[in-house]
Length: 348
Image (tube, rainbow, N blue to C red; front, side, top):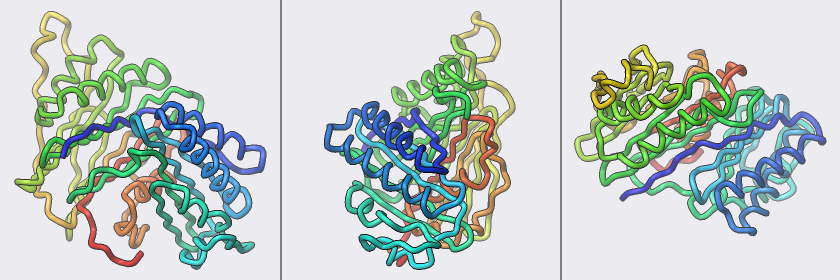
């Protein structure tokens, strides 16, 4: 199994009244064009965004629609809110279902229209609805699942954060990058880092971080973390520099994966440009059930997995969106990525 997915474009649309539904559809259309989707899939993106946004206006508090481009061939739409939540999730997916106290109308149509759909809700806490569209909407099947969300600085359209996924045989590499500052220059640094991940996924985590360190010296620099999971040895390796945080969850254990202080690309001068700094690698067992959560400093550390019961039985992007919703600083680009062992097929 091999493949590459780089996630670098995002829209964060606040949906509080009917006038903002059009903005949600427009963001979905722009994302579909960026992903190279065909006209039918573009129309589906617009329709799903309209349905999800309309639900937020009619039935939710604090509604937002996150729109992300997953490389060439997929768009991800995630509707999040702070309540009131859905009491009967199964019923809410029936065409035409709605109540005065819960989000629900149109979710059945969203499930039918999406290439991939998932829904998580807790009464009193809120709902996350995930819809993906496009020929590349589904990740390669295997023992590891990955999902994530990114959002721009509230005053910028260019996104300084991003993440990349690379499958190479039994090994998966996940890179999370936060370009220094925000806006266009931060996006340039982020793109340069993810380009290196895309071109050289065979390098180990420290080697890849070193290549990024050298490659970013023509940019303003970035923070980044690289995590690699080897399915053969069942080992995780992690290397990071700057303000990208990692936490590894295993039964009875919660391990912080600490990045070194510093900025990639801001090392000593060009006279030693071919000698990247050494980077510390943290290793750990990767045994089911396990979950790795990576996020940039646009997300606070004030989140707790116990707040999201049974989220492990949903798409990992659902958990990423829940953390984004509840721990977003609101004054920076933000990224959350969830990597986990594939769960057993259990009722949700």
